[in-house]
Amino acid sequence: MDVKSSVLERYSEGAKSQQADLCCPVDYNTELLKILPKEILERDYGCGDPSRYVRKGDTVLDLGSGGGKICYIAAQLVGDSGHVIGLDMNHDMLSLAQKYKAEMADKIGSDRVSFYYGHIQDLALDLNAADTYLKKHPIKNKGDLEKFDAWQLKQKKTQPLIADNSIDLIVSNCVLNLVDDTQKLQLINEIFRVLKPGGRVAISDIISDEFVPDEMKADPELWSGCISGVFQEKEFIQKFIDAGFYSVAYDKWDDTPWKTINDIEFRSVTLTAIKAEQTVAMDEGHTVMYKGPYTSVTDDKGYVFDRGDRTAVSNIHFNALRNSALATDFVFIAPQKNACCATAWSDTLFTVRKIKDSKIGSGNDSGGASSSCCG
Image (cartoon, rainbow, N blue to C red; front, side, top):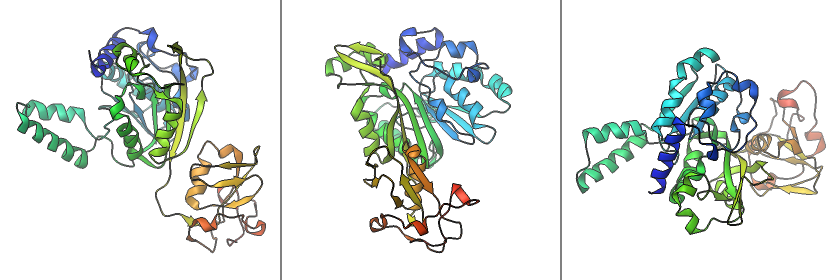
């Protein structure tokens, strides 16, 4: 049995009866679990709680949504102005999630959840549309295959399942490791594509301290069991940095391994990251101060912030830092709305901001204000 078939079969079985060996112990907000159907709770498989990163008004995409547990938790958090999309490739899991859609909409107060049939490594392709095409145009020869390939390219460009720059937060719970190694780079690039500028990532998954050897990767049982397809701990972070994400961090790291096989430790983590805004960076008077406790820190853009210095940053960098894992280590001083200067940002402007040009007043926008001009 190949890896994909093993994953589909194992999780189809998991939709019908509980598979305890697919779970890690996770502490959820019990208040948010109270209204969830027992069947969904029993058929849930994961290693973390990425729903705790959801904000009111978010459009959330859950990759590998399974029976819908994280989706229905997130739906309670996004409120009437938000929406949650669950995406999975397994019909049995999607059927379980859809089974309670009307009931959950009634309990929550509105229909805020949609479930899509698709691959998490190809968020543009609607698999329902692909199935419909293949029923009308079965592949019998090489020419038919070439026509199907051309149809897919056009379909993904003109009618993508998940559009570019459309998602505020992407979550996933122990699913990235199930994707074939040859498609993991495409998976991360797809995550980047569909996120809005300033959008966030919260991925709970299993990682390994050492690279998994080929003989373990070839074992379908280990792969479908969230073991042999995992990222190595440094590799996981680096792949997101290479894809263009900012402030990539392990916000959760389990000290105790979930499993140890062949002296390789497998543990649960939650990785967070941000897609930086794509607009032109300007110097509008935004200022930050690194509070410590270290002499200095270097962010993913290569900027070095010395402890205690009021440092000039662009409007884009200011927002990225404020939404990053470093946020609690900084003071953020926003300019007044009527700041008189706004010039295109360049790295030469990354200097210490004069005190008189970064006064923190009261009653100003965004929690602080500078004087009316940049220094």
